[in-house]
Image (cartoon, rainbow over all chains, first blue to last red; front, side, top):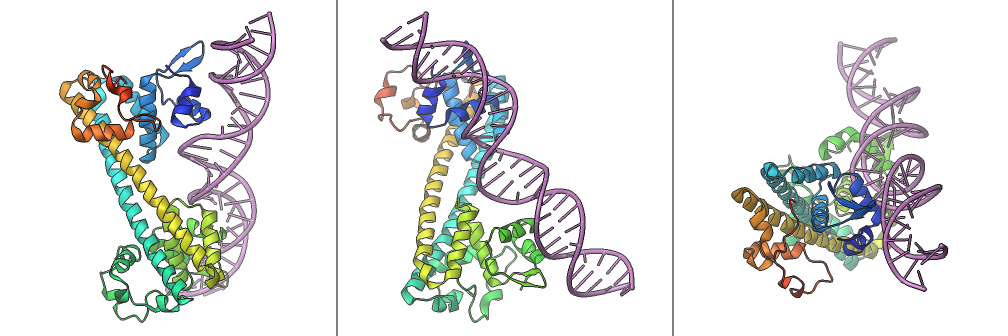
Length: 167
Length: 167
DNA sequence: TCTTGACCTAAAGTCAGGTTTAGGTTCTAT
DNA sequence: ATAGAACCTAAACCTGACTTTAGGTCAAGA
C-alpha cells in the first residue's frame, strides 16, 4: 500500500491531479485509513489504465464509466473489451493522422532546404508538382489535396502550383 | 480569392474559428475589401500549415510567431526550418508514445478475451509474466514497468504478478 | 427599394482538465 | 508532548481554444 505522495513520485503525476482523479471517481472503492488514501495494486493498475485511456483520447467521464464497469464484475467483461477495441481503432487512426502531419513537415523541411540553398523561394515556389522529388511529391500530394479533388486534372495545366508566397 | 464562408466549407472549419485565427494573428497581411476578408492561396497554405502545426502539438501563439517569421522574409528561412525539424521530433515521439498505448490496449484486449473465455479473471490474474504469450508479454512489459525497474529480478519470484483485481 | 443572406466586431461564455488557496488534521521522529 | 512533514477538503482560479451573443454593415436579387 502506498500513500498519495509515493504514488505521485512513482508515476510523476502531481498530488493535486491524483486527488482530482479520485474526486472524479476514477478510483472507486479506494481504501482509506483515518481519512488518508491508501493506493494498492488495484489503484496502480487503474492509474496505468487512466494514463492509457487518456492518451488514447478518452475523456475523464468515460474513464469513470469504465472504472464503474470494473466494479460491477463479470457482467461487464465484454463491454470493457469493446471499449478497448474502440480505443484501438481511435489510436490507429490518430497514428495515421500523425503520419500525414509528418508528410507535411517533411515537405516543409525540404522546401526550406531549397529556399536556403537558393537564398530565396522563387524557384521552389515556381516548381510544378511533377518536378518535385519522388518522396517530396508524395508528401506534398498527401497534404495539399482536398477530399473532393480528382487525382491530377485540376493541377495539370497550371504554371506553378506552389503559389503561396512566403509560407 | 475566397470568402470566409467558402474557406469554411473547403476546410470544414467553422467560420468562428477562422475569425478567431485571424484575430490571433495567424493570417498577417490578409486582404480585405470594405471590411470583408479575402482568403488567397497564401491564406489557404497558411491554414494547411496551421492545421499541421496544431496537430503536431503547437500552441496558437507559437504558430503566430511562425507566421510572423514568414512575413519577415529570407532572413528567417533557417529559423522556420528549425521549427519544422523540432516538430518532426515531437511528432515522431508522439507516434512512439501512441504505439506504447497500443501495446497496453492489446494487452487489455487479450486479458478480457481470457476473462470472457474463463467466465472470470482468476486464471489470467494469477499468470506469471513469463507464462504470457510472447506478443502479449512484450506488450505487458512495455506498459507495466517503471523507468527505474531492472529487467526481471523484481518480478521473478512472485506468485502472480497480475494482482490488480477487476481492472 | 426592400429584404435576405453573408459578412463584420467586441465581449462574454464555455469546456476540459487540471492547479491553487485557505484552513484544518494526522503521522513520525525527537 | 511537540514540531514539522505529509496528509485532508471545498472552493476558487487558471489556461487554451474555441463558441455564442448582441448589435451592426454590405451586396445582390425580386
